[in-house]
Image 1 (cartoon, rainbow, N blue to C red):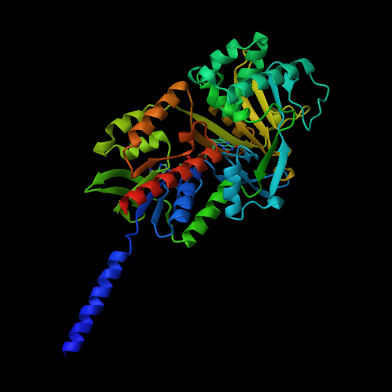
Image 2 (image 1 turned 30 degrees about the horizontal axis):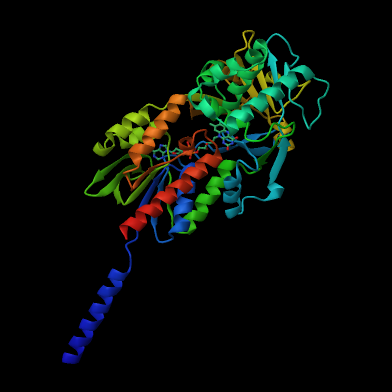
Length: 452
Ligand SMILES: Cc1cc2nc3c(=O)[nH]c(=O)nc-3n(C[C@H](O)[C@H](O)[C@H](O)COP(=O)(O)OP(=O)(O)OC[C@H]3O[C@@H](n4cnc5c(N)ncnc54)[C@H](O)[C@@H]3O)c2cc1C
């Protein structure tokens, strides 16, 4: 009997030591299932397979801005088209390419490559004002304007490499200061820049010079820029990554909008909704992979975040309406281009249209346009409408960059809270969304080291 008693004591002692030896598994909440949220879950899971990760997405599917939709081409075949981000390129998007490879989604048979080409035309004339060369060919278009455009690219590239005081300048003032003919700046450069971001010519003048040139001047001025498109779509790649993460134990909660995140008793409480009503769960580390205005709403109940909240509310956004349609009247079919910018008589951008058939023949007869509500109604009336998505897009002004710095200062002492999203890296792309996911992982690792 005594022997049994001693044995039991030893077993109990061993059990308790084993319990203490095992480090507690940290509970991580990722809010937002766009590229940034999926990337945060991806990197944190890889760095600490023991972490208990829950990803909350308000919509039924992962993807966020990167959503892939099915529409019919001219032949009546359903093809996958990205409503938001469409293309990427090697060099500036290398981290994105590595992510696709990690999920076996970078299959060269399923990627189309195309050369960039832009034309700008005005309401009064069907003849384009400028066409960048398609496949390196000048096609007999206005060589003088083309050379001015090349000169503009060289100046933009210089700002990109050596920003100097351009950080504090808006792009309207910078373009104004360039030694180029005034009408060329108004009729070509400003509409081109507005088209790059999908916003109005008025809005684009307010944006930060450095952030906007990043969008197109990431390489030496070249007559040939090659872009890549995923046949199955960027949104499909994210859904695929989500399914793979689920197999690795990440809890993916779709249709679960997070109402609030706040500190209680040393834990973060995440309050969210799902089909079964309102739920509350405690977490050790939280990543908010959402836009600034969404993060402000989520943090509003947290007393510790009052100043952070004010900063988050200060970021400026604009709405971009992207319409997939089959209406070729927005495109000059005699001088086709990948991106066709159409301006009004006073050089305001009326629409910009991507001729998707030039990217890949499967997209034959499908156009993707930035359109106002009025133009969208016209497309619907003509029976040419396929799909519409309205995005909230950050307008990266010099004040935006200042706000970002302040936000980072306020987050510095908050070791267990991270605010991510493509927008936190300046200009938004799939690449910057991924980088923000990696930075969330780096913060998590520092937090974990301090905890143990
Ligand atoms: C029209 C357009 C074209 C673009 N083209 C390109 C391109 O060609 N190439 C490129 O690389 N990039 C492009 N981009 C940029 C790219 O789409 C973004 O940088 C990227 O998708 C941003 O990802 P994100 O995860 O930061 O944000 P989002 O994709 O916006 O993700 C945020 C997620 O959070 C979710 N969410 C919000 N609030 C809550 C809540 N309360 N609870 C739970 N979930 C919540 C949202 O539903 C969403 O899924 C484009 C963007 C737009 C709008």
